[in-house]
Amino acid sequence: MHITHHGGNEGVTGSCHQLHYRDSDSVLVDCGMFQGRDARRFPSDEIQFPLDGIQGLVLTHVHIDHVGRIPYLIEAGFHKPIYCTPPTARFLPIMLEDSIRLGITKNKRFIAQVLKEIKALIHPVPFGKWQDLPRGASFRYSPAGHILGSAYVEFDYGDERFVFSGDLGSRCTPILHPPTSPERADVLVLESTYGDRLHEGRETRVARLESILCETMENRGVTIIPAFSLGRTQELLYELNQIMEGIGHRTHCSMLQAIDIIVDSPMAIKLTDIYEQMKEYWNEEANEVLTVDSQPFVFKNLIEIDQAGESRGNVEYLKRSGRPAIVIAGSGMCTGGRVVEYLKNFITKPTTDIVFVGYQAIGTLGRQIQECHEGKCGVTIDRQDFLVRAKTHTLSGYSAHADQSDLIRFVQGMKSPPSEVRLVHGEYQARMVLADKLNSLGIKTIACTNPDEVPPEDDRPRSEPAE
Image 1: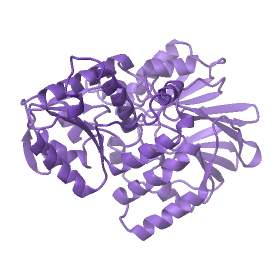
Image 2 (image 1 turned 30 degrees about the vertical axis):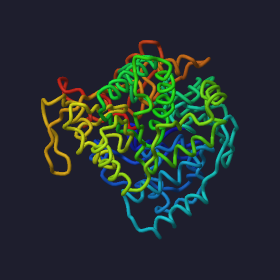
Image 3 (image 1 turned 90 degrees about the vertical axis):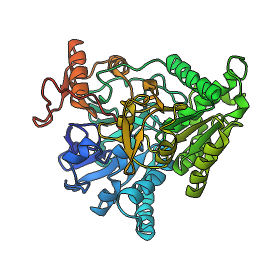
Image 4 (image 1 turned 60 degrees about the vertical axis):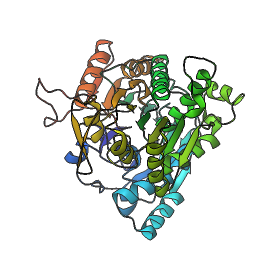
């Protein structure tokens, strides 16, 4: 077997890998959209490789940088099975509908036709079950712990086994089962998003979030959390529920019933409903919580806002009422969506806290706010200038990606070390640092590079994970 990369091997986004298991037969692993810097290098999302002999598309999970080019794949004439786990099968149409509407067209008839074709090709495969491919190959899904339904994939053909990690989750991720290492691999294609850093632990991040919540209640301010609709929002709701319950038993944080927690994202609301319907994929801790709380994403103070008019009305309500509130809204990097309206109305207030729980890419509004502290500079939003008087916080422990120690543990946990590790899905520095670490452990590791990608020695970029 051998691999051809069509994206994700020299950057973070656009993951798409073609595994050739016979001279005339192959399978695609993911077909994601390029974003951020990668989109500038690869401005077209159209499929630019032949589809001859491709027997199917095997998805690792449903984030857009892994599935966003599927509409273009269909347009190019792809009509083979789209394999995925059962939760991914539920999420995929919702994620792609939003992606098509925002990035391709708002034509409802076109969107409906594309989604109809995609739905007809979806073939759910349970975790742990070997699925046959035409002419002798097979694959199996195992939990990756990144988002609900995410998986790494083992491919067998003859005596060879190739493993694609997809995106691996952190050990600190609530709700989900952490990934366990495969037994063996001749070649392991491994993500490297956080190959150059470590996350803060779960206890630390929960304590920091609780501290911010307490301050919000005490100063009657507004805390704004820009969050991705799938994965991050559900994790925040789950842990906020636990924090609220804990605060209720202590006296140093009063006014518990006087705070509103607001989710202002139609997609996040839809996806949270699916999370609740798929409890069989939750980990032991989350299922134990279910014995005392049948709805761990729902609590007294939760307000869900679906319609756009309600969103604008809620901003005015918060300005008038003076009630403390936590607002979870998209987009995760503040590049658009409903979070922008909250920022415009509250970013100049010293009683506002802005909490970043995901990476803020260079050039995004989120990154500008993250680097601007309490009246020291301003930002431009919708062509208006705002002085940032809000306090900003970054909780790195909420990343959905494994950090360096998790990635190394995943490799070392294999009974037989892989003959080769090939690093993908990471910026230059992340790949280089992780490659050095693994090679020093005696594990042959290759980090793909492009001469145009290598930055000057004094300008090494930090990783830019796609959440």
